Picture 1 (cartoon, rainbow, N blue to C red):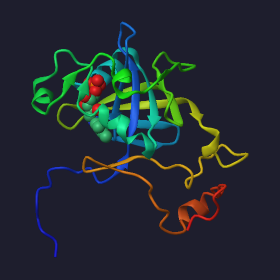
Picture 2: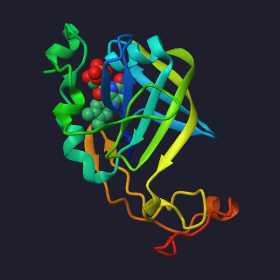
Picture 3: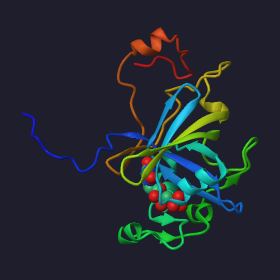
Length: 209
Ligand SMILES: Cc1cc2nc3c(=O)[nH]c(=O)nc-3n(C[C@H](O)[C@H](O)[C@H](O)COP(=O)(O)O)c2cc1C
């Protein structure tokens, strides 16, 4: 039986990324987010307007999107109550956020220079995408959707299907957020018709199902 209930949160499960940005003065920032979706060579990134990250993306038109493996959950959680906004917006202060100017340091993460944008990559992330913001759309209450064109992808070799430009879905273990909790080690559920029709190559670890 279904119950008609106004759900408070609709975070059903999505991959966590770390967004690397710089402010107009060149100071680096890194922030976790889970509102990213992908189509072709673009990503749509949903961020609250009162985050330093959203303001940096507007100011510079650049971002790096760093895909988080499940093994980095501790580093992500160290960022969970930090913002580079000073003063901390009231609604965030009420939720326990603190100002932190050095979020890379606070998380124990390492800045890595990108090739085509000034925004920093996150060295610990095995998939790093250098992006240019091509459009910004108002979204929901107090949020914006940033269209990001992927200019260059950096992938740890161990995640590639050998001899191809495809990520091996068995080797890649994304950190997922469901309803604000963290998950990883997703199992392959069954053979995929989509993967078969797209002629997706199989990786080192073999069959999908
Ligand atoms: C796992 C995780 C996922 C998050 N997802 C989002 C998101 O999708 N959009 C968003 O605006 N904030 C998200 N946040 C909150 C931001 O990281 C938070 O607002 C942070 O203070 C932004 O930092 P900044 O102000 O330094 O940019 C998420 C936080 C965590 C820990």
